Image (cartoon, rainbow, N blue to C red; front, side, top):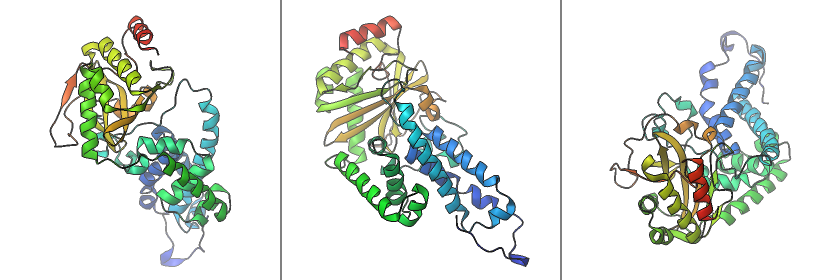
Length: 356
């Protein structure tokens, strides 16, 4: 913690600076989300951080040279502790764990998620550090690697400050960040695909999926593509990731058949890239994120756990900005994800027929 000698007279403040302190909230939310992969957990971290700030006396608050740096240090340490305990919790998590998807900032208020009334300070600033592919790589890092990498490479904190948060030497933090960078480089797609091209591929995938066109689906998927779903034991999903274009296409076509016309797809921005939101009977059932390499989909992440869909759960399917040309486009008759969302018998039948 950086402190300063208290000064008297005109320079003495009666308030440590409420506005300045609260202005840090959005940055802390963004930090917490990148460190934890969960907006709900990030909000809890920020709440705890502010609770610790206001537990200080006014004299102690005034002695802190940089309140923003103090808040970051505290939030970072809380996240580091949570990352350690999260590994143990994941061992009992039902199925695959996928980071919590977030919508585009404008969609928090008026877009496809319809999340009216969301506090602007709770929105995530979208960039390449919050794409689903990037967050999945972060999730494979050790807690210390992740904290050192995110603080230094994403938020540009010097290693001296990172060391204070991680509890290691600056040299050790430099090594942690270097190791994390190697992980990121090893997982990166061969070449970035422009967002407009990705939107077109996602749109064609949706159209083929709704039409149950297995041949078209296979043509849009990388031969070694993987589809992973996260229901957290609270929603029906594939028991294991689907691997291979033909297996994914066959399974998704069968799901579309079982789901019938109860599902509406809306094209939305998911973690900064084109994605899909599936509404079932007017309620968000699944959020899809994609990784695209070249002109093929290489990864699909389908999040169905309702606890991870909180920012998307209000509102009805409606107009959404087309990432390609500004047109609006809604469709019906699609599935919800790697599960049908239908009756138990239908879901069981679909599972047997697709080999889930």
